[in-house]
Length: 256
Image 1 (cartoon, one colour):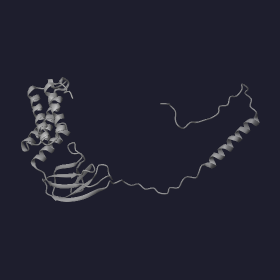
Image 2: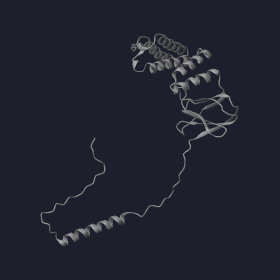
Image 3: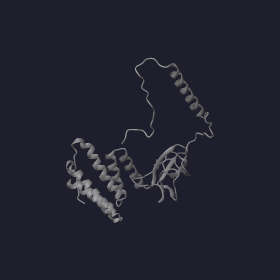
Image 4: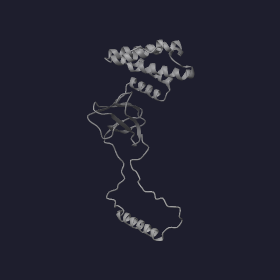
C-alpha cells in the first residue's frame, strides 16, 4: 500500500544565490505579499460556531419490565425464548441490584437464568434484545426449577470457572436425575477430558496419554450422548460426537 496520505501539501522551494545581500525592496515586497495572504486567510475563517444543541445522555436499550414475588431460598428458572432475535434478560433483586444476567444459555441464542433467590420480596425482570433496539415476538416465563435444571446449571457454572472435577460430578448427578438427557452426557465427557488435560499438563499430547479407565469413561459418555441426540432427530450433531468418541478411543482423526 502506498505510504502517503490522501491529503497532500504542495509548495514551492526558492533557491537563493551565493550573495548574502538581499534587495531591500524585494524583501519588503515579499513581506507585504505574505501579510496580505495572512489577512485574506484570517478573514476567511468564520467566527466560533455557536452550539445549536448539546446534551449528555445515557442510551437505554429498549426492554420490557416484569415483576414477580418470591420467597428467600426459592430456586427459579427464567426463560426468554424468541425465534426472531437474540434474547437478553436481567434479574434484579427487590433492592434493584443486578442478581444475574444472561444472553446465550448453554450455547443457544436463548436467554435463561437459573437462580436461588437470596431474599423474599418483589423481583424485577428486564427482557430485551442483545442488540438493544432490535426485537420481535418472544415468550418469557418464570417457574420453579426442577432438581435436574438446578444441578445441570451448577455443572455449567463449574465449567465456566474451569472447575472440571466439580463439573463432572454435577453432570453425573444430572444424569441420575434425567438419564435420557444427552446434554449431561456430552458435558460430562468434555469435563473429564479437560480435567485430564490440566492434570497431565505438558505430559498430555493426545488421547493415548489418558488413563485407561478415564479414557473409557469419556468414550462411553460421548457415545451415549450421540445415541440420545440421534433419537431426538439430531443426527448430524450426533455424527460429530461419534467422531469425537472415535478420536478419544483410537487417537486417530476420523476421515470424512
